[in-house]
Image 1 (tube, rainbow, N blue to C red):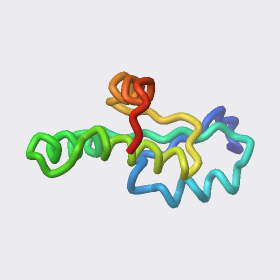
Image 2: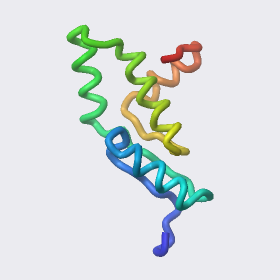
Image 3: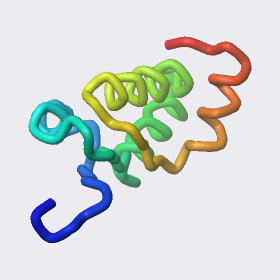
Image 4: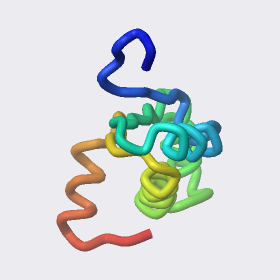
Length: 92
């Protein structure tokens, strides 16, 4: 922030939810972004492909957790898909 950043970004998002919370508390008026990295995305896709979990439910739970931790913006490989789930009224 001292160097003039417009947005703070945390990546990977899921393993740094505590960092998101602390940044939100320390910088309440600053836009905070979180990046759900490819490994997080691939992990859920692989588990769903093996029938170990519902990809929709797991993905929405993860995105909600990121939002609840304080992110204003979430960068994710599943943005279009998640938007459709949300539009259609899906919940985790």
